[in-house]
Length: 349
Image 1: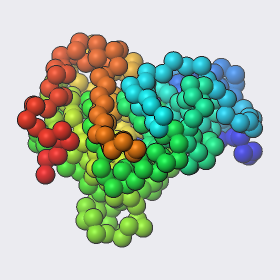
Image 2: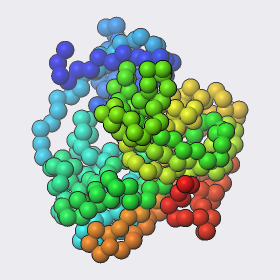
Image 3: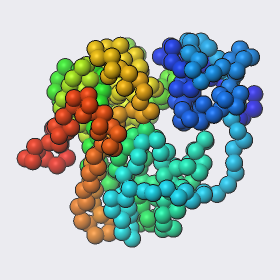
């Protein structure tokens, strides 16, 4: 099997889903549209046959996917209008839309935020190499919201240090399946690659199958992660959450919420589709099944300007399509904003 061919076996948690939706969860494919294009081009086979996009997969099925030859090239500017919240000579803050990958990767060489950034400005830091200039932190493809970008190595190093020292204010909003037993929760664990599914992350467990919650554990087992969550509104077995990150690990919120039995709506990788039947309203179920993203949004970002030492704070609302949906479903979005007397960082401790 060549390096451009993927052999993909269907796990139990993907049983019964459409083939195009399943393939879109692969990092090498990354979108439902690209999955459909590969299927229509007969680049996906199952038992020697060419299945359709609507084909329903079953646990244990094995699919062979032939990817196009990778293009060897330098970064290509992308003429994409950016929603820039702030910009000066040292940094810029952008409101990233859902569906946009942050930096080039397999399957997304020229259509990322980085490609749009190099079209917008020639001044980006190179601290982490030529494939991700300016990128201090990242958001998952389907996560929308605020992101800071460094224009030079000085600001990049200073901003990275603030993230490392947990001095950055980060608030996310999420809609999850289920209703939390408590209005306020704190999740903490070591997060590492899932032991059997390499596309996922998971909290590390001890030999008895219990999540390790002691921060003094062996750091080699994973990266320590802490998430605070407040349930602000619930309706029809769905809950609207305001979340604060102490750390910023890969898939951190998605892991902590799914392991608490509260997977984020639309997050197929972490089992959200298993909860669809618990929603009592048929039209609501139909709306959710039609989602092209999971409902996680980076709403607030605050940090100290690396050169001026000014305290900067940025806030972005849910994108308009998700705002309309959430209001249609009866959620009161104003509840996501804490009372004025509450600390800006929303720290429950």
